[in-house]
Length: 207
Image 1 (cartoon, rainbow, N blue to C red):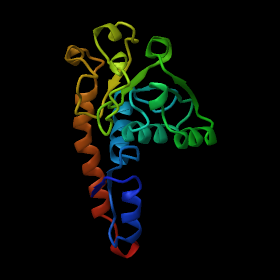
Image 2: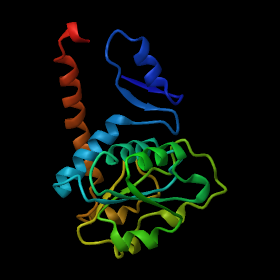
Image 3: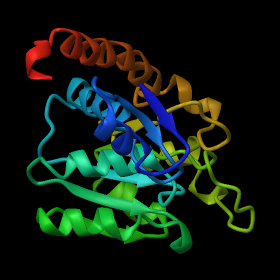
């Protein structure tokens, strides 16, 4: 299991390793596959489907490896609509958009969260704004989720976050039934146990 400070570190390690390598996050704008798997499981557990979802990813998306990995996996399902909501200089990077274009996934690039959340977001996700981000000249406070934002969300919306959270989600949100991030964190144990069990059960002759 490897967390690497450089993007692509996990892939490079897997290329020379005699045993499976689990990418536990690479770089400040790479991938975080196991987080994306537990996110998918959480969405399925909460929404009972992975098709036909409208998902908003909000925050410093260029450095958000969890948001990048989730967007990649969601692109494999049907009738997905993604809203990437971020300051222009922190918007999702072109490699993810090229992948979504290749798979005919509908998406919009927005700078204003208020335009997307009340309109069509069903399952929402909050990308971390702190990890790997030292750009203090950009005001991210307007992307925070607080009681006022809750009032704009649909009753069946879901708020997700990879944790740990800082100021980007107000503690007042914690008691709202739409706040799924603590359930999401618990799901991480189940999903990662399943992944380890799958690897340990592999026939060594097929490694």
